[in-house]
Amino acid sequence: MTTLTTWLGHVELPNPVLNAAGCGGSGRELSPFFDLARLGAFVTGSIALEARAGRPAPRAAETPSGLLGATGLPGPGIEAFLAKDLPWLLKQGARTVVSIAGNTVDEYAEAARRLHDAPGVTAIEVNLACPNAEDRGVMFAAHADAAADVVRAVRAHTRQDVPVIAKLSPDLADVVTMALACVDAGADALSVVNAVLGMTIDTPARRPALPGVLSGGLSGPAIRPIAVRCVYEVHAALPKVPLIGMGGVARGEDALEFIVAGASAVAVGTALLHDPSAPPRILKELEEALGTRGIGRLTDAVGLAHRATGNVPRQIRPEHLAVTAPRPRAESSTMPGTPSPAGAPPGAPHGAGEDKIEESSS
Ligand SMILES: Cc1cc2nc3c(=O)[nH]c(=O)nc-3n(C[C@H](O)[C@H](O)[C@H](O)COP(=O)(O)O)c2cc1C
Image 1: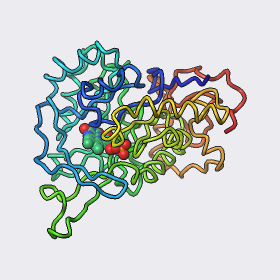
Image 2: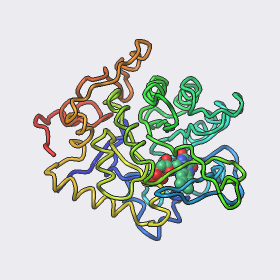
Image 3: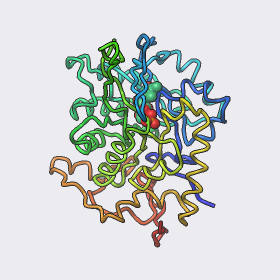
């Protein structure tokens, strides 16, 4: 029997398999396939202050091993979400991670403020892959300073007992610098990664297959090695920050790959579109994969690949060492390269797992 409990900051989840933002609808679409309370947490599509219709069709194009999408983040707007969707999710017993979107720092802050007193918010995920209206539409996710401003504003308007998760884009030369900036600004956990910027051409028509937007976000198995690399690098630099790994998770072995790279949880996105019952299956496969390797606790598997490779942490620049100072809230940061207490999950409350002396072998 494998213990699958994991932590997002100080919040305990019964298991590490979530859906990825935007891939589970409002929850109602998934609920005929499995009980939403069986997910580690349900993640909403990104919600903006106002309702959004999303982009006109075509919103997606198939590519080999991937999906190129440009949805324009359709959603009900925060008030309708609070009135209808969140109470419904609470009634299902789902732990809900609310993903928020905005085009200015103030819009993100206002979304967080309106969620402040809402019952049933387990965590807030900040989708940074949104154009910044105050900087020529450049994505917040592209600049560490802009991303940090958003995370700081959201953290300031969020209850201390609700973790703030910053969602990173893989379209960066240096994902670690972005991760450090977000943690320094108050992120308790990181989602790694959003879809990869891509383009596909409709060759017979001699034009981009997504004509309105030209490029889109590539997701699915095609991006898994990119996502795993990002998780590995961020965990090497910030071993105590809980990471939710995502990008092409479709099987238990895929989930395990992210976990040994350093993720404390995984999210299933594109796989849900053709197999809506994937999360409970992936959880069962993950449990079997851990059991087969003699690993009794999921948290013992987090980052195992670093031990195998000797974990040579990246050189962190001095200005980033601020994130290594102990933080009273979630104790999420540590000196790069400092080994976690044996068995302690990244971001676990103080003392969690410290009784564990022996490492599990895989
Ligand atoms: C149809 C679709 C809608 C998505 N909507 C969102 C969204 O609302 N917010 C967000 O942060 N990411 C969104 N994403 C990105 C996913 O949450 C995830 O980060 C990415 O697709 C990688 O995971 P995957 O390969 O398992 O799909 C969306 C992805 C897809 C395919």
